[in-house]
Length: 55
Length: 413
Image (cartoon, rainbow over all chains, first blue to last red; front, side):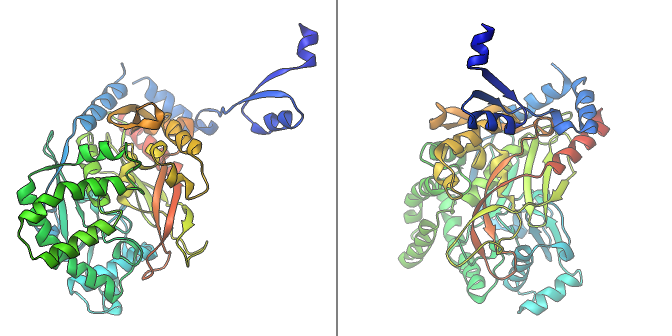
C-alpha cells in the first residue's frame, strides 16, 4: 500500500494553487480545493461573523 | 432558526412574492416622491458635484440644458458649482437610472407597481447606445433626441398603457431568460416581448402613422429598450424585502462612477460605499483601454435580483465579450450561489437544468467567502460629453460589505 502510494501519489491540494500547478507540471495526479480562510483571515471580520452567528 | 435567518427568509419571501407590472408613463416631477423643481436624480450612492465622475457630470450638464435651466455647458456647470441644483440618488426616491442615471423633473418615467405589496418604482426611457445622456454625452443631437422622446414617444406610450392595462414584467423576464437574455447587458428578448405586448395597443391609439413608425423603429432598433422597465421591476421587487429588522440581505448594488454603494434590508436609510472599480471592457470600435470610466449605474439592481451576471449561464455571449466561454458563464452563476440565500422560483436557467437564479445576497456570506458579486455592465467614457465605450465585467468592492457588516453588528450585535 505504502509502496503504491509512493509510486503514484494521489494528491488533494488545499489552499495555495501553486503547489497543485507544480504537481501537475511534473505529471502527478492532483486535485485542487480552492479553500481560503474565512473573511480572508481578517480577525475583526471573523469576530463580527461569530458574534452574528449567535443571534 | 436564528433571528437573522428568520429575517432573511422573510425578506426573500417578499421579494419572490412581488409582482411588478408597468402601469403608465408620467413626468418625473408629477410622480416621483420628493422630486423637486430644481432637482436632478442620479445613479449610485449620494455624491456632490465636486466628486462626480465625468459621465455623471456630462449627464448633469445635458439634463440642465434639456430642462432649459442653462443653454450651454458653461452655464450648466456654473449652476452646479454654485449649488443651485439639488442632487439626490434615484434609489432614495423610489427610482433607478441606468449608467449616469440622471432623471430630471420634465423627463417622462415608466411607473412600475408591485401589485402584491403596493410599492412603486420609476425609471426614465432608454435612449439607445453610444452618444446618449446616460453615458455622459450632451451634444445638440442628444438633447434633441430627449426632446423628441417627450414630444412623440411619451404621449404614444401614455395612450398605450391606458389601453393595455398593467403589463406583467415578471412574466416577460421569466420568458426572456429562456430566450438567451441574462436581462442586464442582453435585453434582446425582453425588449421584443415588450414590443409584441405593446403593438396591438399602439395601433388602437389611432396616432399618426408616421409618429407610430418613428417610435416603433426607435424602440425596436434599441436592444436595451426593456432595460428601463427591467430595472424598476427589480427595484419594486427588492424594495418589498427592504427594511426588515435583522435581515442581512442586500437590496441594492449601485454605482455613480466614483463610488460603489450597497443598501442592506436591515439597515434602511444607510449607504455603504467604496471606490468604484474599473470594469474589464470590450471596447466599441474607435475606443481603447484607458478611455473607460469607473463602474457606473443603478443597473446592477439586475444582479441584486439574481439576473445579469448572476444569470450568466443563460447568456454565454455576454461573457464572450471578454473572451469567456459558456463554461465560464455557468461557473459565474454557480459561484454566485455561494453568497446568496436562495434560488429564484420564477427566474430559471435552462443550461443549469432549469435551476433558479441565485437570489438574496447575504453580506455575511460575501465577507466570509471573499466571493464578490459579479456584474455585467455598460461602460462609459471617463470624460464628460463622449458617451458609451463598450461593455464590461466587474466585481463589487469588498469594503462596502465589510462596512455594512460592521454597522449591522453595531445595530443588532
